[in-house]
Image 1 (cartoon, helix red, strand yellow):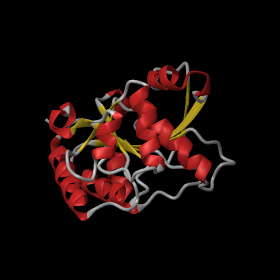
Image 2 (image 1 turned 30 degrees about the vertical axis):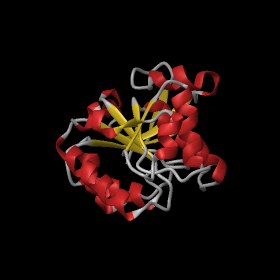
Image 3 (image 1 turned 120 degrees about the vertical axis):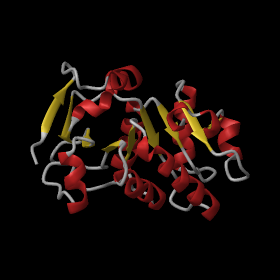
Length: 205
């Protein structure tokens, strides 16, 4: 697969990176796939690793509702529930942006990714250079901030209290991003931060 270099002067470079990351916005990002899907309405997904079963079921139902939509869903797709979201989305029509916590140069493309890449609805996007080809905790934090900055809204099915996911939500709510979640006993911490219910989510309508 060909690797694209997207500079800040390119039309496909997400303008929201400059808006939200300002001087920390990468000068160049690397891509495999169709960068035009970055122009669609977008929704980023983040979740803590350990997630209540009730939340998993509701999240899978929401992803099935998005299968026929024309939005772009963005995530690193690292946690178990994020990976399940990816599996469901790739069986439908939505465009998907995968933001790995490493360089995409020399990255092996899994067989199940080849068809959506050929269809132009899958994009690998990374702010990391070729030397950063191993996942570290620092890179994981950076790629989450990168994915959040690109998206219009964030969907967080579950953020464990005092977790990095909760801290991520707090930061982006303070910066004016809409963070959405399910309204139940497991997400009270997110609503205290200012999250909004998924029932009003324009992406899932």
